[in-house]
Image (cartoon, rainbow, N blue to C red; front, top):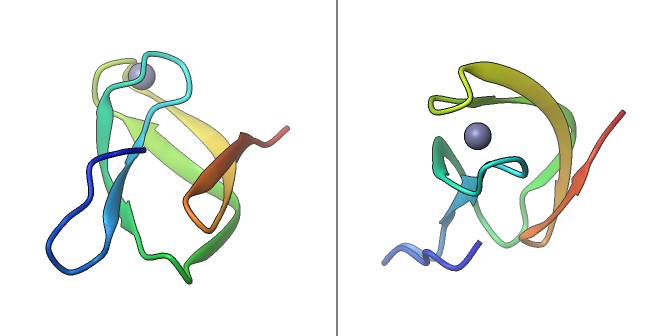
Length: 58
Ligand SMILES: [Zn+2]
């Protein structure tokens, strides 16, 4: 996740293919078991995100 926006947010990248998703997070955003959808993989995967660090959730 290196695509920093002007407002301090970043787009979450897909943990499988690495492409940018349409979900953005801020530094203080905490996602737990978030259903992240990837346009490229055309599927949803659950992820945890804390301070821009993403972990694939099971
Ligand atoms: Zn993907």
